[in-house]
Amino acid sequence: MYESGKTAQVAAEMRSNNLTLLAISEIRWTQAGQRRLLTGELLLYSGHEESDAPHTQGVGFRLSKQAQRALIGWEAHGSRIITASFRTKMKRIKMNVVQCYAPTNDSEEEDKDYFYNRLQKILEILPDKDIILMGDFNTKIGPDNTGYKQVMGTHTLGEMSENGERFVDLCALNNLVIEGSIFPHKRIHKSTWVSPAGTTENQIDHVCISKKFRRSLQDIRVRRRADAASDHHLVVARLKLKLKKNWIDTSDRRVKYNVSLLKDHKTKEDFGPRLKNKFSVLQDRSEEEEDSVLNRWQKVRHTLRSVC
Image 1 (cartoon, rainbow, N blue to C red):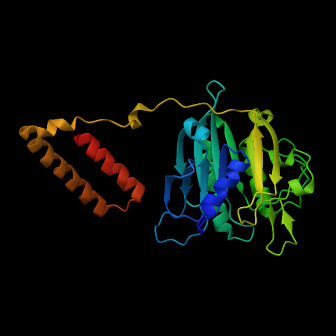
Image 2: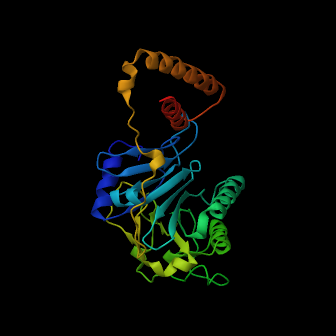
């Protein structure tokens, strides 16, 4: 996504594959935020918190207009995890989607421990446990599901790696089913990654869903024709769980202020000093605290609204 023209290329593939929600790994943008694209989609992203950090890792969601209407909220969790919640047409059911980019099998043990511990804490605090967990987990789980029959099937590639053991244990602890192992597809519709030389293929991208909703997932397979200049193939899941337009949050509704009141000399004299004092306090706090651009903008907006 950091390369020139990649955003438009991904948008074209999203529309051609008729995707409601697209989860992305290695977005390579720094900090966190959201961006409205010219094509109408909304991009939510989470990267390294420092603005001068290297353009590596990063995760994000790309939302169609339908998904935008159902969006309840989202949260950034650093350069490897992002979450979003959506309203569905099933009464009282929210869909909590978690997108991840896990450390590789060769990474330091400390990095892997930190990632899985943090992911576990995030899964524990998600409401209702209506979870879809997906992303590039850099892990092979293999077809041997001995001891894990409640978590995975046998329709997978390769042999279970160390990362695979961590991943499967996480799913077992949180009552998640690895759906890519359930559906019996051909090999070309299972392998999600191909080596630069094109000689090796692995199944390292996975989609998991809470056990009580496993029947909602009708199919999951790889679409190899999607072109985004990546060494990963597009993994598509088809769910019966439909999104619903979310209620209007009146707290975020644009407020119209009666600016004609400023024509009154007394009102104008009262408004000016109040606004100046508020922003002076905000500036002093900003110099003491290290905030992201998004957080600073939220504070500026809140300050202006409160004075108005």
